[in-house]
Amino acid sequence: MDTAGKGKRTTSKKDAEKLQCDAKNSMESGGAAGGGNGGHPNQNVNPGQEGSHQRLSKKQLYTLLSLWMEVFPNTETSDDPKKSDEIKINTVGLVVVENSKIIGLHRSSKNVHAGQVAILKHALRLQGCELYFSRKPCSTCLKMIINAGVKSVFYWPVDPEVSLCGQNTVKAEDDANAVEKLTSNSHTRVQILLLPVSDELQNFISNTSMRSIFRRKVGEQIEGEHNLRENFERLFLIADEQDHKSILGKIGLETIVSDHCFTILKSAMKKLIYLLADISSSVPELPNWGFYPTSSNNESSSTHQRDVARHCMVQAELLSYRTEDPKTKVGAVIWAKGKSHCAGTGNMYLVGCSYNGFVIGSEFADFPRTVTAKQRSAVNKYKYIIHAEQNALYFRSQDIKVEDEPMLFTTKCPCNDCVFLIQAAGIKEIYTDNSDAGSVQGEISFTEFPKLNDIKKYTWQRYDG
Ligand SMILES: [Zn+2]
Ligand SMILES: [Zn+2]
Image (spheres, rainbow, N blue to C red):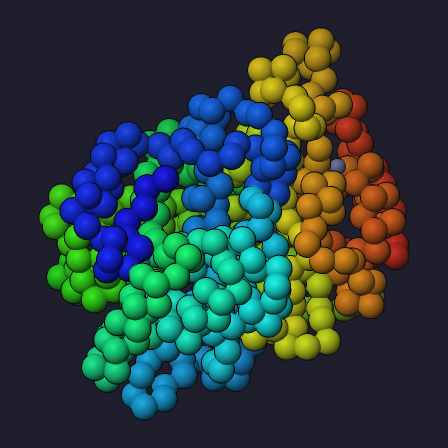
């Protein structure tokens, strides 16, 4: 894997050369294939399919989700990051991965850092896990993470959690040095990833997100969108090259600062940010559109609730780009509302998430990945595909507690098979689009969804109220 740096000790010239070399070798190809939260962790997939042209690699997905979690709609009264002794603490997004399975999506709050949330939520389970941070964690978080036996920490190389752009840079640099010392003496690998994005993947994502089911329903030109990629650049990159290089130098990545390495890194980061911007645009942010209750009893949902629903649906969209069936890509995420406050995500905690994939033991070549009308009569892929909702229920990391009002977010209306499964599992709310509701499409039927009465349904619609 393309890594650079395990503290100052190992950020050698060799690492810098490796970074260049790996960049040349282009697409990330290592890691166990299949897995993620769909398919099966031990499933053999043709090596070329991992991170292939129409599919995000696992590491790309985890990285994008960590960045996206950084902007989880804030439940706190004040949006200001905590400032103590003039140290500025940046908000951080975090993805916890256990054996290729996402078991936690977190965001820091005003008082609790994302790394600390992971410790509180997962405790002993963190042993051997991989953590994907949207920024390099501070020493307070890192020492707990190291003690928990975390295998690897990956981070997005921008301004770290303890901001180096704050007022008191001396204190911030002290913390950065402590992080380096902790790293160089521990078994936890702390590193960055270089994740090149192929033009094919970029085009595929750009085109499919423009034609998402949610956008098609809105059906009009959405204004101000040309700024979306720029907005995301502002959020997740450092505009000024010298500032960026200076920060990299202070967080143990001085070998990357050389012009050639930096250019490769910056370009890869930019392309990933564009992917995130494009995918987030599949669920457009519009004042009169959102997930509203379908029931006729004039129930409404708060703006915050709608923002959270949109955020979770974008998580599902991100997951859908790991599908093994790009023609019908579906992502699903299950969240629930706990009794305790989970820091940056309010009282919400992740139960499970996944995407549609082939049944265990099936090779890609065995089944058609895209089905034309002619092929449909010959081989029906639906018999071999496990739906995103089914995988999300199976690959869950928490029990489903009915009293915690579990919520399912899925990018496609659940089929009849899934509706019964969701009902039996104890899901209390479904967020989806109902364009397919009531229809029969070949062997797959969506006739049960409209009849569902004991689950609250929130569908993508225009609302003038
Ligand atoms: Zn921290
Ligand atoms: Zn289904």
